[in-house]
Image (cartoon, rainbow, N blue to C red; front, side, top):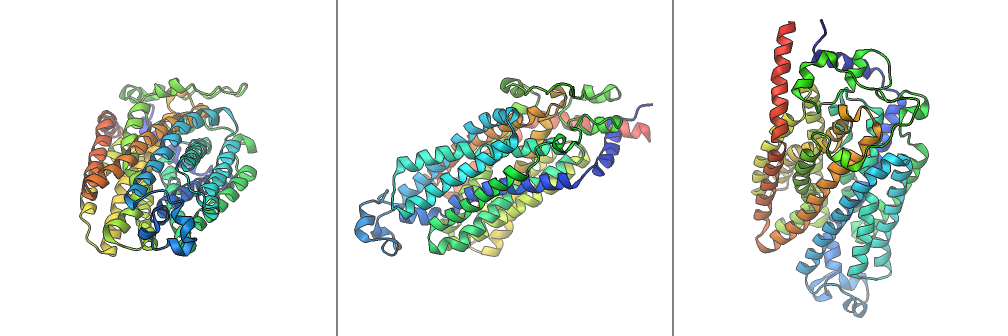
Length: 501
């Protein structure tokens, strides 16, 4: 009698744990810190918004202008007549960055599946570091302020930064199979939150000398990271003579380890006849087409859901330090350090929720419960008192329930989608699918950043949080068909388990 799929997959999980080598650890750490550095440079911009806004407004509204440069030079080159207009332009820059980042993700995923992933990732890191240096450091040293120049640089930066996520997810997908993927990717996807923490720490350390030094430090570290990635990162097991995932011939357990979580009940009911088609080792598998990838089951639903969720997550990412300074009157450096607690919550949330989804063998129900609790935490955080300890606790809880699902969709679920049965284990689909999911999410986030600044300026911060609650609820709505299907599968597997006992 053939064992039900859920029992065979449990055996597969135990068998694959022993396959972890020092190469896996090296890949985990290099991809983790490469994307952390990319996020750290983005976080720098959000952490110094108050300083940039002050520098871009007239000296009679700016107490730091006379200390930074001659009075006559400053008043002849300021960008905006008021801090409100400067803030609106900063929101516009966020939107410009995210739109170009979204467009770049759709392209970078396809490029990453067709070129060497290490080259693409390293090029993106080093080139982006140079653009950030020019944007934040060189222009300030030269006292050159121009809105169109800033916009052009941020478009280029968004395109270059988009090379990061599809490449690192594809490389991780090449090295780590489905066994324990929720936990491994949940832990690994903390790279974005660690990058936020690193960026906030670096910026707060040098911000007293001027915001240009915050850009200088993060850009330098990112450039060095890109060089290390170019010489040290292995993109797939075959580079060191290991078989690709799906090529190992160790029995059915190993095949089940690569079985996706994205499947139908009919497939699960006939699980004993299931087999993964290993790629033909005699020829290089072709990369999946863009529209082919869009038509894969679950890709569009998760992409639309991620558009709503990433809007909320990135709004916290871009605006949280500014909100703390603007709403509570706390110093910018203190607000930067306090905002770290949102990322701490996201790290813990992504890891724990990924582990739970591994145990259940389903992702969508875990996401739904977390997002329902996120609605409550958003409502609670909108009414947080002017107390740093209380604010930090509620902020961490909010990060747990929002950052956790966001990390899971962008990493583990994207890897599941890119390795489902219709792809037949073809690793050349991973970067493309990841680019589609994250690119759609970035479009939502781009629209959101402009809306946040617009809503805040006209209605206040409370209505911004109501907007976040609406978007979080929309995320649940988009994945409702997947939730229903996976709950039915859970009940079906439970019946199977009871029959075998």
